[in-house]
Image (cartoon, rainbow, N blue to C red; front, side, top):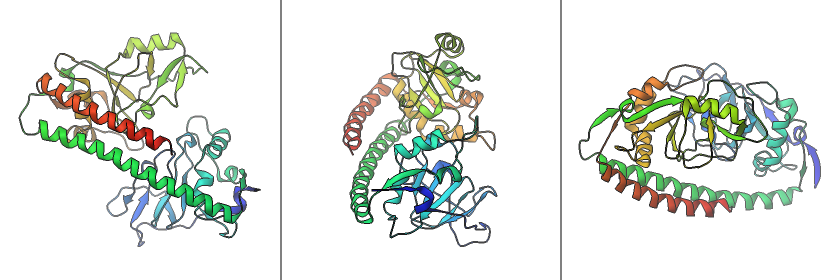
Length: 365
């Protein structure tokens, strides 16, 4: 093993491209990354897009993209196509293939040790960021080129298996969606706005609390996963007094449905923990009428294209998109007989068990 600085083996590329006069077809923005994942979650097409003037850095297949904003999100992925990204994204490549294998490069950067360094050396008070000059000084141990290639082969093989597990998990979600459509699209059911289907719709505190090392769990939109679960692996803590103050505005109970108002808009999750939690303003709580609605059914309906289209049509803002409470309240939902909802919930819970088993296997990789 040899200790090296990042700048000694990795080069930052700053080739500019005019997106209005280029043969490049795609762009990559923050929403196309998935936290902690080597593979990109998506990409956008330049033609017809509304990307801003700051998207001018070109990248090529094999480059590694690292988002400099909010390093706690760990957004960095390898690309296998050419395109453009914003000036807030670092385009990185191997400086010398005889020293650092391009196949090994992603594993140098997408790991806990690197991101801990980035977190410890971040700048800013509210909008955190990392400078390239700071990252350039990151020191790590580099194996021989032969060992790098062997290690990379093993890691990419494991990544391929993880990728297949993720496809299976997505297939489970697709089955739930198709079942929802099959059961509830064939008949006409009462249609009412969420404001009538809920006894209360409100959001979390609009004031940033005084955080503590320990105390009451405090969550925001970032703690809602894409499959409608609450993730408590990265949370903040608040005092009992702050929690009680927040509860006066948005009391939460087991079974309530939470809905993201910013970030990934309109993502629902069910409160399924019996310990107290405080909410930030990026989360709305839907106190739905349990005499006419089942929580799991409501969660899955909120994910449906018909409801999501209503949410998207009500989004305001340019720099930061935000889902307002009045938009949520006037969003219409169907209300089938409760017995039919519960039958659908039984099916969803069976699928969730399968997902849990798959997730357990995938988590071992």
